Length: 148
Image 1 (cartoon, helix red, strand yellow):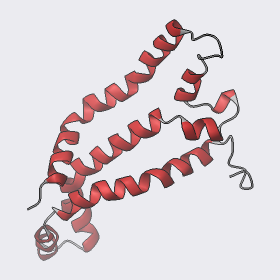
Image 2 (tube, helix red, strand yellow):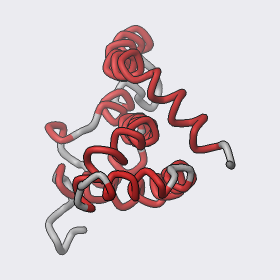
Image 3 (cartoon, rainbow, N blue to C red):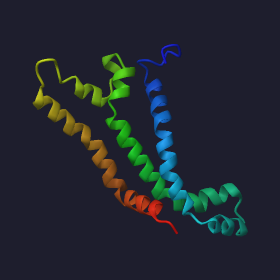
């Protein structure tokens, strides 16, 4: 990372997050995608869709709950991740929120009031995301777990 000049760089942290989260997403979405019947794509192609047309018009709307659930899990894990951001980010301008919250802890004191207030503010984006996507999360998790 140092040789590529990606230390203390947001692009470097984004690339590491992507590399870490892809295996989890693959495993999570695999079970969900296996339950989508091949007959949907075949029926769309019989009705005149190309392979890409069948993908975007028929399959993606069916797969949307699983994709949204995987996105939410990955967002929350990256939002709350501390170790990689502490390791790769040095300057105050590039610190992530968990790293900034960690700054309220010193060797001899913890500023509980400020840290609690900041923690409540950092929870808000995740709560809003869950509020808008809760239906897709439940549907995506239950669809991928059923063997059929």
